[in-house]
Length: 209
Image 1 (spheres, helix red, strand yellow):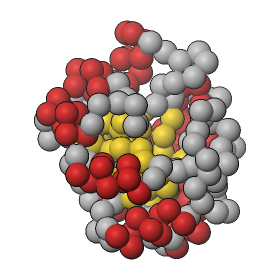
Image 2 (cartoon, helix red, strand yellow):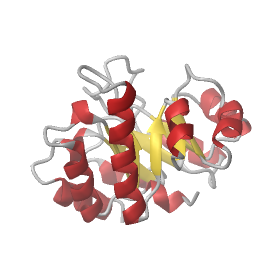
Image 3 (cartoon, helix red, strand yellow):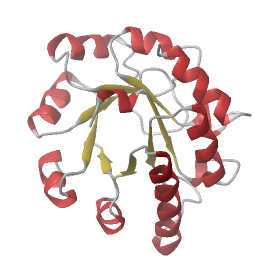
Image 4 (tube, rainbow, N blue to C red):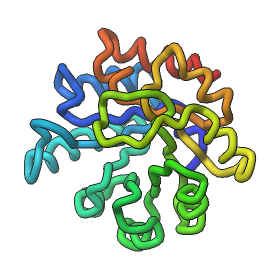
């Protein structure tokens, strides 16, 4: 994968979207997102066939737009539908194991410390998602807020390794995340709950330039 694909990384599932998720994704693509992760978690989240059907719809939208379609955690689903990759957390099996299952797809790992970051690189991850950079309400079980200091440290030790910031990122603070050295910002509500997802995505893209 190319690090520029992380520039504006939109993450969402149906519980995050007040409008149909397909509609929100299309608008976000119009605004210039560079990657999409289907993260179907939380109250009212789809399961089974309904989840798979929605994943296929979103994958089709991403394919038409030429942006990577990533599945959060659900490796089985990612393999079934031939997703472009998966994003895993610290509770999941290591990236080296996941890579064997998804055969050539993108593997992203959530990291919260330098130790976890070094381990993800060693395990063959393609990129690391680090955070929460700022306080967030989307995930209730988050680690302590890391700020941008951890991103600076990561990039100091591994300048070439792709890193994307996540957690509480808004149009107002996205610039500071990029300034710290991140290759991009990943957001959920900054786009999914925006009055105009296309405009929000465009402003986030601008903040990174």
